[in-house]
Image (cartoon, rainbow, N blue to C red):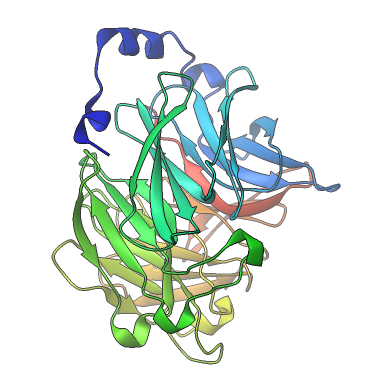
Length: 359
């Protein structure tokens, strides 16, 4: 894909954007998350920092994560891998704006991100017949029409995030899958995850891979601080009894740094969401399969402690600490404790809690 696709500008597009509802008009939700209810109904839910449900909007089947438009009250809810739909929702009116269907030979990986100006949406995708990782490109100013795709820089792109400089980080998990084989990993002997950086024009500018003894540690979920440091939640695909670290961090130009924690085994080799506190002092990483959360020092990466939290799933910044979705509600706090906020409705949360930073 050519650079010009990322540099579309124009007064007409800006005027169209400004005419649409803003996040403030949608009741100023602080977070988005996907959830299920009894009877297998599936929803995109907007939450305030107090745990109030601002809206719940139906989606076709189980969701995974969401991408919030930088300033319009629009969110894209992505199907869980290997889903083929994404739904663009007007969070002020509760109406569906557009439905994204993955092209032939592609499926979504549950994540995406907008460009800084909000004009384009990028989606992580599996080109499963090649196989190759792709980032689909959709025009958010023209009904979310697909206008192209670019390489993700690896196999199995999962979470991607926009960095403060307008570029992106992409977690290429390394796992080759095919929808005919559900979620089976087909390339264990050759699996090689990586973390890929793209500039604001979509050009790959840096990549880093785990060392050989860590190549089965799939890079899946990521977060970044204001300086561009990326922290990584890993999912081990090797011997289930092997004691391996599930958290890493990276700065461009350096090697990956892995961090052990005495309670890592409680995550059952599966780290879910990860976040850095706003003041940079703590890192929190959830283990949905183990009902546990690990906390690390945000500067040194040293382990602080762990906490048993049932169905701990998504984590995002809350003040100087975290908001964590768990069974029955939301925990607001950090390694030293916190306040449990009950949320009615019988929700079962999916893995992610997406913070909305209003522009």
